[in-house]
Amino acid sequence: MNRCLSWLRVGLLSAVGVSGAAHAATVDFGVAYHSGGTGVLDSSWARVGAGGMRVLGGTATFGVSTRAVDAGYSRSLSLPPLGAVTSSTALAVTYSGGVRFTSRANATAGPIALSAGGSYFTTSATSVDPLAAWTATPTDLRGSGWTADVTARYRVSRTLVAVLGGEFGSQAQGFAGVEGRRDLVRTLPPAEDDDPAAPPETEITGTINWRVGARAGRDVLGATAGVSYSTPSGVNVSMDALLGPSSLGLTAGVSAADVLGVGSTLRLYGAYEPWRTASAPLRAGVDYGVPLGSGTLTLTVSGGRDLAGQLGFGARIGYGLDLPPVAPGTDTP
Amino acid sequence: MTIRTITLTLVAALLGAAHAQTAQDIVSKVDAAQRAAKDISFRLAGTGSLDTTSQKLDLLVRTIPAQNLVRVQFNAPDALADNIVVADKTEVRQYLYLTNQVTVTSAGKAADTAGLTGLDFTQLGNTASLLSGYNVKLLGSTGAAGKHIYQLEATPKSGASGRTLVWISESGWRPTRLQVQDGGGKTLADLTVSAFKTNAGLTAAALRQLPKDAEVIRQ
Image (cartoon, each protein chain N blue to C red):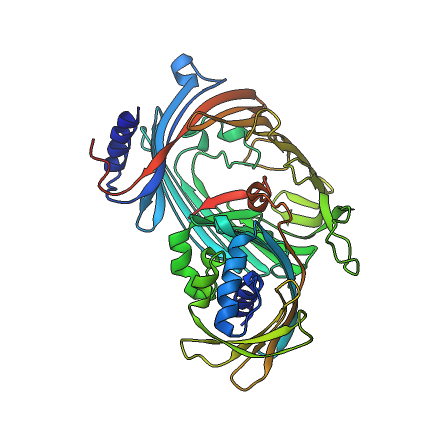
């Protein structure tokens, strides 16, 4: 088995021109089926890819699917405890000649976080990923165009964060708001060697986060508000709303860790955003992941209603195999 | 300055100790005591100044020396509050509250970038390695026998100006105070160590725990 993995790793790394580095890589497999196709082949999708490969100081991914080939590169610089800078770029080319290029950069330094991203595409997102229309975050479903977004977050105090940002492309808009939180704590029973003069120790049992703001732009104007509750065990429940003179939007989500198996993750989400003019107005889905063998098994079921009012759904199952790191020179079988 | 303060406080806090007459005795016995402790935790709080601005500094440190595992959780200043750094022999994980992200950096790469911040978290579990960059001198002691407070002075071997004063209590052999001074004798930071505990039953899993809904970014 190890011999097979070693061969597989050599092949995958050679395919992207990488060699001689000590690193851990992953191999991903996935198949999907979605409604709306003209036949079984048109409704099906499969992909195999490799990720986590060290290239030029960053990590690279590469994949081949039944619809496109894709490649990505990401790089980051972490400076504990001050912050981090991360960047990622991805390119997908479909067999019909369509291109999708996306890039994003994030920087955090003390109380300030900046995020900026952009994309250029000559083919729709669903031509590369059949489930792209029903993701929790809205996807621009146009057949061609560009998008850009920028967000700035500033930590006013320990419990208050100011947010300012904008989205550009098919539906230019800006948003601003503040986010706050309240920790729910309990006092721990004193230990035998505790200093009696010291304040009692406490632990956080849950955190309530809230946010209020406004969003304005092309075909949207409204106030926004949201609240979420999270626990240290990994449970998170959230709900957000947009309400304006002619705009309405509701999103909600629940996620939990270790609920369906040790190390598992489970997320359910739903979004009703008819004010968006380039994304599916109704989206819902379930994401599930669980460690299995030397990798992670993932399952996604999602669906919704597109801009034309058509209902659709899709399902995808995937497996990511973690290859053990190998030192240079040990790949030789 | 603040980072150097944290470094030296961690060094001091990891100094366990024994009855000693010289700085080298203290350092040697402290190192032995650190190795003997299954786990160590303490709070470091006070004020530090950057340029002319003084700000509050408050952080909680937990470590399992045998595993070179260290967890540092910031409570102040607000800009860094709730950020968490977990370091061991193989990697450094940094949780950023503002973006709900966890960055994962190999120990080797973290050591390479440590020069940018002045703090190599991968070395925090290794007292001898940390002290290798400083000349440590015993300035004196106060108090009655068995309750001495030893005052140590650490100066960078690199020749950089400034010094750090560390007070260590013979009672329990734990650091109680830390003061950082610049080359002109101006106090840049004055911090106290409290809630110092050893063998509290800390587990590696608890020290490694970070918010489970955070986005993980591997460097």
